[in-house]
Image (cartoon, rainbow, N blue to C red; front, side, top):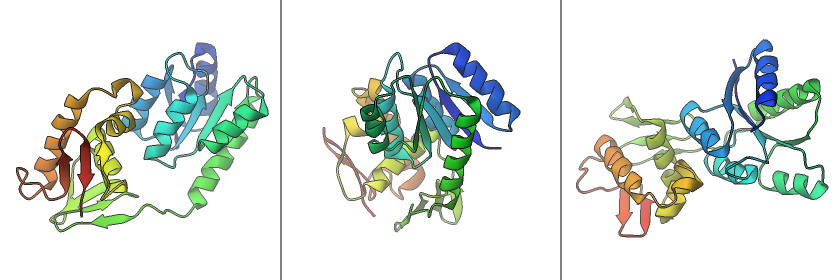
Length: 225
């Protein structure tokens, strides 16, 4: 069963999409704004996203930017804006398709199926990163240490994945917070200290003397192999 995240601030449209998609065998997650959408995206890992551009808190393109920094999951944008420049902006930002409101349900379902087919046949470029202490499989979204899978929470995984994908480079506190928690949390640096400490306890041979999850004081963090 394919899990789809539907993000739209119109209750009637969300309900209509939920009914239609469930009737066709999809598992449906619903979000009314960008903050809720990013939370569900992190915690539920949908396989495709239907995302409205006009949201009450964050612009849909902001939400898309956060998703694209974390994942290649297909994203279909919805919008009442029919201007070609808006479509170009969305596609350039990483959207897989763009549907203008009002739309026919059959058209949207056909675009969903096409996006899922493309994702299923696309080569997986996510690497396996091997350190002296553990292995991170970005495609499978898991960490192996001493032959065992390490249980990570969705937030712990999001933070680790961001650092691993930018290994060897400083990732600022603001970048991590926007990526993992969303734009509304860009100043909550206490979150980073708590979750980094948890990751070190689970992954570092000596958590008090980290070899892989490195802090650059007052600036951010680095992942070193």
